[in-house]
Image (cartoon, rainbow, N blue to C red):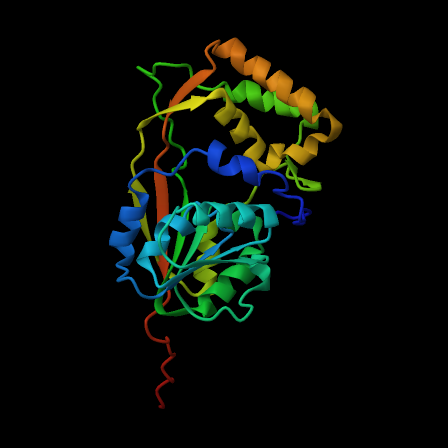
Length: 290
């Protein structure tokens, strides 16, 4: 993780009720593409590390015998369990509260491990090496994120796009100019360079897949507010006693941009990198005698 920053349990505290309502969904073809790429036959086990409210664990659950969602935030796991009970997903899923750094924790072997926009919060080298050991031969590690660098067009949308730059400035007005993250700050954001980390752990690849977005997505004012409160950098608890004042100002900003309280944008594409554990152990040939 970023030097000088340490994870603490308040990182996503209070965000869980807003997460599923506020976060932009992955491209709609993501689950079929993963099924095509991974070739699951209804058996095997998947672990979703940093599962949040089950955003991917639940729709992927019918493809496996068992899915295990791991997350350190109790609110996220409670929301995941609530969504599972409501019928989101049809497979066998269980939820385990723990940090990724505490794996393997006796959870057993897996066919697939998924990190969906969660890996950057972890001790990456440690977690990658541990997950490598938890996968069976030929197992897959799947890293999922919004397509980086994409700028979906706004032409022809029936409502305005949410004023994201102005929202960011409002957050800074309340919380200060440096990005907040739990009890700490991330002046330079979260780290990249995942490829080097996975290579060091022993994975082969990657295979890159892009699932196109672009579909028109209408969002109500409440959904945009939920998006703001779903972010670690603007989690509800960071505002303390000024939370209600912030929300009032946020809603005022949104209404100034769209008096109807309706907004519109295009779904982002989804980028998937698949890394494979070698099917057989690689050995070093002994040097020939001379």
